[in-house]
Length: 146
Image (cartoon, rainbow, N blue to C red; front, side, top):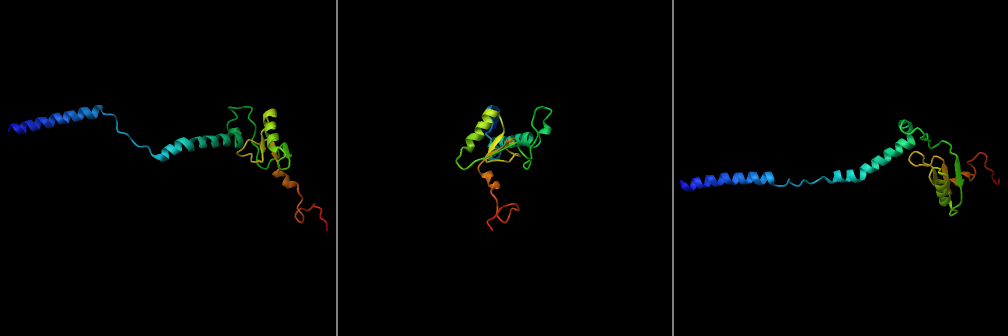
């Protein structure tokens, strides 16, 4: 009978010890889902950047109350103020940088996409010069050797 009493008292003290240990133990470590980390680190900044471009380039009227001097949107097929055409390796990238830095223009190099790039003033390009090469049998006003 004594041994059973001792066992009962030991089991009670063990449960008290367990409760104390559980109360003071640090919380269990939880594993974060890798998809959450990828979303937080990579996709959130990407989404914020795309929202910035969307607001400033495609729909500036939505934030015009915050920035009264914001420039209006320019569609892809709208005419621009500037197109500089050069040949390959003629310094078109340097000209684009100089126009951006010295005159503060929104000029793109080999880029005319105004929906997602700040190229609302124009483009410096060698490739855009291809549109000025006549296409025989395709252009009505093209002169041919016939």
